[in-house]
Length: 449
Image (tube, rainbow, N blue to C red; front, side, top):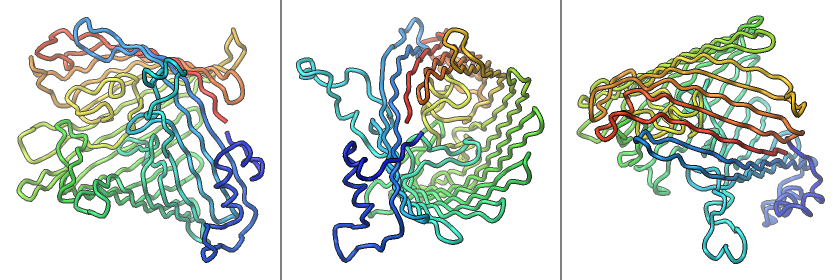
C-alpha cells in the first residue's frame, strides 16, 4: 500500500523530505550538474511495522528445551518519479547482516534507566536503493534490488536484495532481461576475491492459460574468493565458473493449475589451480492444484540431487542461493537445517519432498473479518544417505504445518504459523540416537501502508 504526498507535505513529516525536495528541483548541489526539468515530481511513501512472538524447538538433542522470544521489524520506503522515464526507490529496514528484525528489549544496562532504546542491530539499513530509466525500446535498473528467478528453486534474493545492473525489454508477449549481479565484493577494487553473476532471462506468455520461461546464470568467482556455497561440505567457491539453467512453466485451465520448474548445473564449483570440482547438481519441482469452490487442494513434489561420493571431484549436491525463509515447509530447511547441509536455507539440496496441502478463504465467525487458512502434510527424505555418526540414514520425517491469516482492517492483519515435525533417523547423531521431534509456533501482527 502506498501513499502519495506533495513534496511540501512530505518534508514536514519525514526527514527524507529534504532529499525529496532536491529531487523536485533537480539539483545535485553543483550548478554544473543541473538537470533539465522533465515534469512534475511525484513522491510516494510506503512502510510496514511487524511484531512477532514465537516458541521454537529446533534442536533434536534429547529433552532439549524450546526457546521463546518476541521481535519486531520496521520498513520505510520512498519512491520518486519525475516524468515518465526516470524513477528511484529507497527502502530502509531494521537489522544488519542476515537478520531483518530486532529482539524486544535489545539494548544495554543503561536502557533500564532511560527506556528500551535499541542497539546497533536495529539500525535502518538499505533493503532497496535503485534508479530506473525507461528508454524508448528498453529499460535499465541500477542499484540494490530484489531479484528472483523462475519459481524460486535455484535463486531467490527477495529478502535482502542484491547490488545489480538489469537491462530489460518486452517484445509483444516476450520479456527479456540481462542482469549483472555482484554477489560478493570482499575487497573493493580487487577482482580476485569477487563472486559475480551474469544472468539472461526470457519469459513468454503463450496464451491466457500458459506462460513459461528459461534463465541461465553464470557464476564467476575470483581466484581467491573465500565464500562457501551450499554444498553440504561448505566447499569453497574459489575459482568458480559454474552455470545453472532453469526452465519453468505455469498452466491454468478451468479449476486446475500446474507449476513446473527444472534446474541443472554444469561447469566448475571451484578451481584451486590443483584441484577442480565439477558441478553436477540438478533439481525439479512440480505442483498441481484443484479449485473445489470453497477450498483448493494441492499436491507438490520436489527433488534436489545429493552428493553420492564426498571423495571424488564431482559436486552432485544441488547448489542454490535462497532466502532464509520458509518455502514449502516451516521446519525442514527453515527453522532447522536439513541433515547433512551446511545451513538452514539450502532448499532442495539432497532432499525429496512429497506434500499434500489444502487452502481456503472464508470469513471468521467471531470477528466477521476475512480469514485465509493453509494446511499441509509433507514427507521428506534425503536422496543420498548420510553418516549420522551412528548409522547411514536418509529418513528426514513427516511434517504437519498450518497457517491462518486474519485481515483485521485495511492494511492490518494477524497471522499464526504452526509446524510439527516427526523426525526421522537422518537426525540421529552419535550423542542422540533417538532424536527429539521439532515444533514451531509463531504469531504476528503487521500493519502495512
